[in-house]
Length: 454
Image 1 (tube, rainbow, N blue to C red):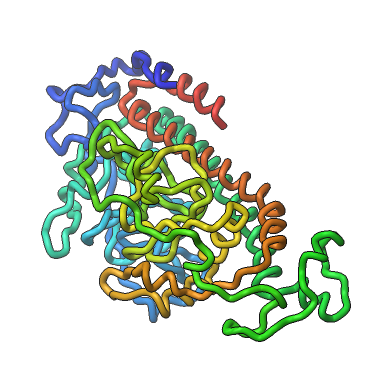
Image 2: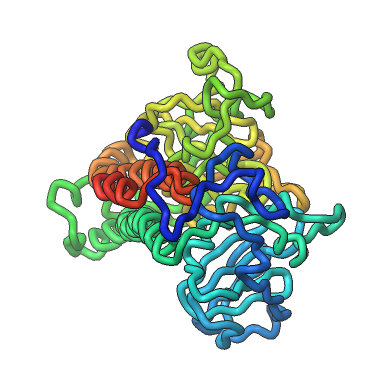
């Protein structure tokens, strides 16, 4: 696909010429574009195109439950029953130490006083195009201050922005939007598939529906005769309370053959080598390899041999920082990924046990249990592995675990395929975006490329 992305710009309307640094107006050069980028479109100061409007304070205690999203500097931060602005609209973060958000809202919304909402000054400005443009350029490099850095309106207004004709803006937004729509469709599909897998997990291992049915002399609903015979027909007392007869309470250390940290602290980045995955690169269904930074080449085989890197079926758990215990995924990728030490590696005793452990770790009940007894630190929450190993977990019998793995594997395989597809689509979107914005890639060519992908 890389070869297809390189095309000469098409002839422009009204005698427009390619823009260069020499004939650009004074202002902040758009980050992400080289100084020698041959812009097909004129560069215009942002202040000539848009107005940044201040949000309005809305404390949590004053919000009334409703369907109106509330946005702050990093994105959506709640809900309310009234709107401050009509949608669709573009919201930009204004202040704070973290990344300033660039968010699109398709409906009416409220913006609090840590963010701006954008309104156009000119008629031919397509706001969804502007969303993609500013999202690519970014805002953090425009912030001023140290203790609570902020983005001033004057600083943003000095930002130079490529300004294609209105119909080109609309076409670019449609092309990039079609990729985002497919990514969102994959997310919705995955939520449905995940809910199906979790429903079975809840029924079998939390509510014990098959065991309760058999104990009452009934046929377990929704199970084949062969599957039903795998479950006991009575309960016994344990440290975890009443559990199915023959199932055993154990610890994570007893369930797993190995629990260890990732191999590295934070080695320097490079342009060549293996991807380094941290907590931010993890989702509940895999590692987003495309977001990982590259590190110097390492001997991956020696890391695996020393139990420092994941094998197929290992569970990766976020154990440090704001997302502590919030994310766990099963490692099944062919990509070789080196893990930061902020990630814990839990190795079940067999592949058939991995799906159960994964869903147990990502259930809300387990997260609450682990937060209460195994997390220390308030500023930077952290799980100590020697403590985590003592966490109590119910271990069903082997036959039930194997059957559970077989039943939910189709859903899990579909989820992984959707995640992989979304990662590819996002990479395509990010590759097309600067070329479309600068005018290097013609709209018809981009439509042809995207049409094959979606």
